[in-house]
Image (cartoon, rainbow over all chains, first blue to last red; front, top):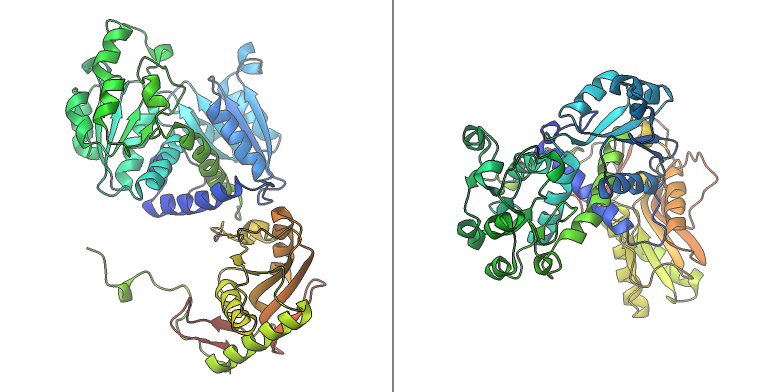
Amino acid sequence: MRKHLLSVDDLSTDDVATLFATAAEMHDVQRRQVKKLPALRGRTIINLFFEDSTRTRSSFEIAGKWLSADTINIAAKGSSASKGESLRDTVRTIAAMGVDALVVRHPASGAALQVSQWVDAAVVNAGDGTHEHPTQALLDAYTLQRRLGGLEGRHVVIVGDLTHSRVFRSNVKCLGKLGAEVTVVAPPTLMPSGVAAWSADAGFATSYDLDAVLPTADAVMMLRVQRERMSGAFFPSAREYTVGYGLTRDRLGVLGPDVPICHPGPMNRGLEIAADAADAAQSAVLDQVSAGVAVRMSILYHLLAGED
Amino acid sequence: MSAPPTEAAEPAEPAVPEGRVVLDTGDIARALTRIAHEILERNKGAGDLVLLGIPSRGVPLARRIAERIQDVEGVAVPVGALDITMYRDDLRRHPARSPQPTEVPPGGVDGKTVVLVDDVLYSGRTVRAALDAMNDLGRPDVVRLAVLVDRGHRELPIRADHVGKNLPSARTERVMVRLADTDDVEGVWIE
């Protein structure tokens, strides 16, 4: 495994298998009364978040704490960044305190890579702009692998705001690595430009018609409509988006009862996912959250536990 | 197309160790039978016993001891696995190792007599880690240690309660245990 986790590209297929095997053990630890393991005792992990986050940040914090690392959260609001300090100065200041890992979320694509070039600590990308979110892709794939018993040859449908989605970018790479057949579905305005060449190269399919794709889905992943990243009008109305691309009650009926429904959260209920689908027995949303802790424990363990 | 099993990933250790055989299959079987009897004698029966093997080769050894206890007492003693990877004191000296499964039997360990089972007792550091790992799982009444081979050179104040074979060795020598459950061959070698 490399020193940093900036992109799914940093991981070989074997690395992913190793991370998942360790995550499965971590998952068992979550059910114990004493959830702490001593593996990262004396290590310091800083969560540096320049964007709002609930689950990713708390998931990394819990993961670090259960491995006995000292975990500190820094949010951009209330930090020196809001006083005008540059990212480089903020990061180098924190690194100078002697931290072993930086978990970075930033609205600029490539921020985590930049940070990794400025510090000696291991850097984990917890989302950089519209580029990548590798730990989310790993926990999604881990959840689906456990639900489906394996991903080889399984048809995973990813639906939603692809243009702004780092989750989708990391997921097509990760799911592809594990042998899944991926189809991505979006309205034409939210399909990334140049997707034709990209999908041919990376080996995934694209579609504008959700109803045509759903019947063959072994798993469905709904993406959040990211209003905060949208500068223009990408669809006429929320209602129109739901009719064309939402996982509505009617579409839920088309899916088999064992087809897992994933959503990276936070969900816009009634927009991209109906409450019936979000709360259905086949919904994997809460599984994803608990898997998130296990997978992040595994990542932190493999990045930090061994010799430097 | 997957490769035939014989051409699978190269084993990290030689399939058949070199050196002198100190225990063969029959010796191992007899040693485990004696250990099973010793455990029962010490515990005055199979009541509240739990056997926890330390991966990887302690687990099949624990299972074999449980089979022998079943033969003698007619009681199925709970068997589990206790991984110690996350509790090692030398994690920082090697690339990160992947943890092995920990399986705690349904009854747990609280109030039980837990017998830890491992293949070789050497520095005692594995057992130290196992005691720490046990501490996070619960509070047994008694913890005992059974090993197939005790080769000496302890670095911590730890001793085994049940020993298959005391094997005086030099630090430069290597002791290798192979079991039919995990390997192609079975026996204990010293080199």
